[in-house]
Image (cartoon, rainbow, N blue to C red):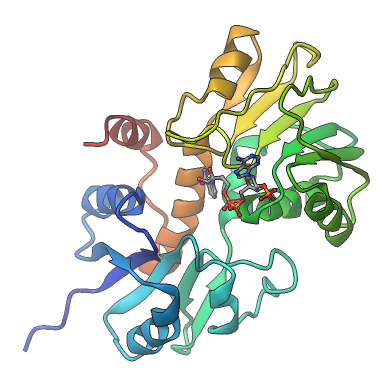
Length: 275
Ligand code: NDP
């Protein structure tokens, strides 16, 4: 009898848009690993049954978790890293050495990876948004010890709660339609504004200094209006694909026991063409 092919998945509702199968499939082929990576549509009312089912399947190595399940899974798996109390959302479930299902969050690491060489200690940071992705961003920023973080969000109360949760100094302000952002060293868009087919993030960057970095988490499209405006002003930019690839790399190693092959340029090209 042949053993079943090991596999991992990405789960969400909807799930057809996910780029994770493209990323993991590319890495599996490049590394010559005989495993599979699939997208699995899981509705909220089927989440706990899904986790119980896969826990009993020895071929299953784990899954990436996307909207709307990132918060709900924290109650279904072990949490040795204290992710429930810190970020409050998980984007990976994997099997520990004992076989128990463990949850973790690689969005914070994926966000921080392109900033690893940037000195953020004592800096002024602007974050747009206060949803799940913003929580991972603020978790990572809190470790970099910025002087202050200004969060703009449609609901400023949510933003204020996040500043307090992550013990960050700063301000929580409403996101006005014609916002002219104040000077800052780093501006991060962690809102959904700018996504294809949605409302763009229309803010004025004119007061950002020439050395400021503009980082957009939105990756569909990659060249968001924010990225285009920042580049037109000569500012350094980091797009959402860097974080997407960074968070996926952490998952790949947890699923298959080794880091992905380091061919980010080829992978970026693949993600841009969608082939
Ligand atoms: P959430 O739904 O948790 O949060 C959405 C955020 O956008 C909230 O701050 C919300 O404001 C704001 N927002 C949504 N619509 C509007 C609007 N019409 N006007 C003003 N504000 C709005 O989503 P996530 O935090 O999970 O995701 C946010 C973005 O980050 C998405 O584009 C996602 O694709 C991207 N992302 C990218 C990753 C990557 O690897 N590159 C990883 C994770 C996310 P309010 O709080 O007032 O509702």
